[in-house]
Amino acid sequence: GFNEIDYVLPHISSMYFFDKLKKGFEMKGYPVGDEQWFLNLPYVGNVGSASIYLMLDELFHSGKLKQGHRVLLIVPESSRFSYSVALLTVV
Image 1 (cartoon, one colour):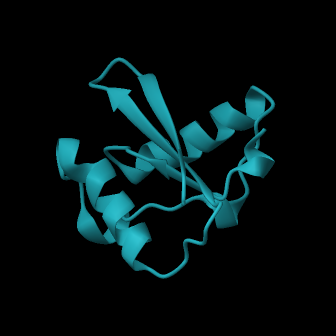
Image 2 (cartoon, one colour):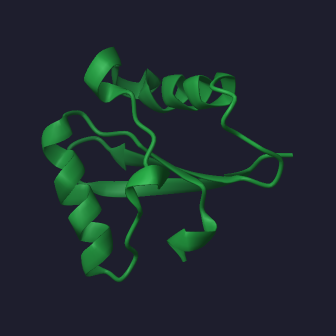
């Protein structure tokens, strides 16, 4: 479950969708704790397809990552609200 994931990086186009995404995970039985979310949209803005790379780069350089941490990337397919995910492990 999500309790085994240290950080969740969602690519969303607007903060309007953040609560909806969070509630969607909860409704499916996968609650994500507030401390697990990592996003920079409020101060970087919507930079389209570069969003996930910029978030990952910022997290990498933040000093927060430790060996063994698991990072879930959530990337949508444009405007269809279907997502692709990648689970990364820090080595």
